[in-house]
Image (cartoon, rainbow, N blue to C red):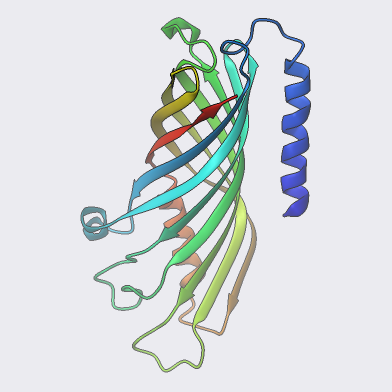
Length: 221
């Protein structure tokens, strides 16, 4: 995990050094942005959950302008997936899936819509490393310890959004994303269980990234 974070930071700095040689890119000479971000996504476990519950993801990102119409950054997010299958006797409110993701993102501002980094409508691509833990406390089974399922992997998303700058300093953006897991790296299950904890967690993670709406606010330097 440390190697992954180090690699993303080095990659971002390398791109930034290269971008410094390009004239007239950026907004009034400002290139770096630090933003907090939150996103909202519904539960897709089953139709009853879709209507009754939702989840929130929060985190932040550091980005830099790498061209007249491009922006590159790294991000860190945390999330908790609750209200599992409210009306299912096996998993009903039995625990939360807690996780985090570290990722690289690239935004291409739409020249045809008048976009000029970092202002305007954009298309974005995200690649994330994620780590998740599902602790299940079965109320209808006599177990000495909760069942713990963990997994790590890579996920990705694409999105559409719009970004603006106010008072020459405050950055605000919003948009929607579509995505899902790409590959699972590790899986592990401890303390037994019913045998379906890992598959259930993976299903919930697929649903998490299927669709989300986000909003961010930060500062440009």
